[in-house]
Image 1 (tube, rainbow over the protein chains, first blue to last red):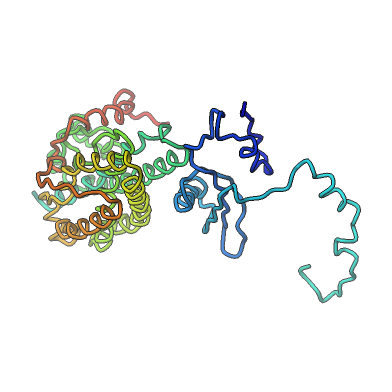
Image 2 (image 1 turned 120 degrees about the vertical axis):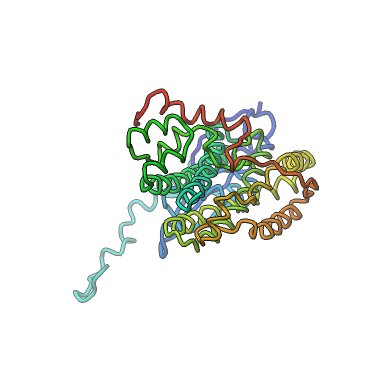
Length: 122
Length: 275
């Protein structure tokens, strides 16, 4: 049985392959187009932000699909796409050891410096 | 026919092409092969409907300025005649929803059924290449409204052309089956490509007046563009020279009646309804 449930969380990438999902699962078979992650820049000077994902046969189609799916309401002026399998994610199960230790290190925030009055916009 | 009648018919030709093609493409909504392409086609359908609205608004403005006795001669549709008899003005909705098939001026190509993805892509491809060169020229129209609609539409059409060209190449130069199905669709739709360049009386009069486009002059551009894409798509250009025609004179294939039945039902059954 190679059935598995999509958790739809970041960090899931690779689960499908590990589970041998291509065979035996009743969806996401090899005949389906690969998944792409879409990043959109909303205006010049801002960075590209992840907005979602979609299916496409290749990069060109992914950009066109992203245009049609994610920029219908003037959301962006530039699109990046990357095939989801190329995104490597941290394991949610290791969150305790990965992120908790930063919890009590307040001195890492630059709030202990005395700033001169002339310095604005900080 | 006088100049104002020619200009009205000319505007309606453009409006009807946009409305009927937009309607056909909108039939894919909810039926697309994948979610992303379902949305892509729905976007395109809305572009066409937007263009249709602009043209219909312009046509209604022209019509409402005509003297009463000239108005009577423009349409055979009884529902419009009634409005004209009552001295009412027409608006964009009247032209779209209350005109009968014989008053529609769209080319036969755009009313042909979707059938499958290949047929849909080929139909759009023929229309998109044409519209791309057509709107480029129409931007120079002496009718400022037509020129403005053309300028706005050209951006949309440029993307439509990118979409349909992409699919022509992808499926034409795809698998054995996709190639064969594209070639079949291309062969069957070919006879509907000629009418795009047929000059109606309105086309001729408007081209002469600098309001319309000399579409016969677009033909070589269309041919060259289509040849290029077909070559890349490894598809063979059909050899047949015989072309369908009649749509521009209001002689349509049986399909238009079904489209209008669906499109106009609500307004006919519940006059003046809004939602």
